[in-house]
Length: 192
Image 1 (cartoon, one colour):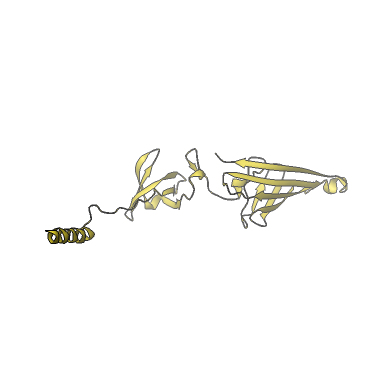
Image 2: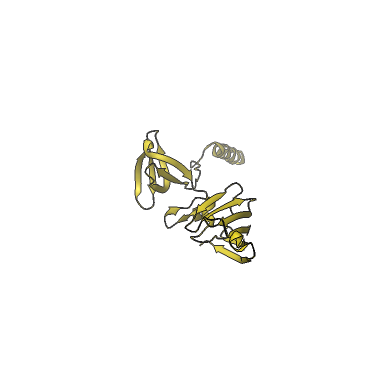
């Protein structure tokens, strides 16, 4: 009797090694994409299928939509969902570091230089390092001239950014270079 029970247990154990009750499924997180069409329209969603001619995109606002590949300009992965603000994808670039008239605490990445043409005159900004940028501002007649410096502090929390900056200017040739001044600031930018 003990031998039968022992053999039955060994047989049951051996069979249980080779038999699975369920298939093992891998959970894959939803990968959001930004699909930009040639006409400038942007759609944010998950690509469900791609048959070579068109993609099926599942968006939050419109549901499932088919987009022909001939109308697609680019498809970009959304690496951080915090970059989606009010349903729009905010790409990184030098102009994400600016407000309408001044800058914010976001750092300009090295090599992402930019220029602005304003009503009062041009300005050019260069990213020397990932944290430090240097700019030159002037009027259309090149007087006065202003040197703009900004240092951004990176934090462990990517939703909070700090920076220190200064604008140091001279009156230029209009006042025989006799007038100097500066504007200094500290800046905090918080992302919700």
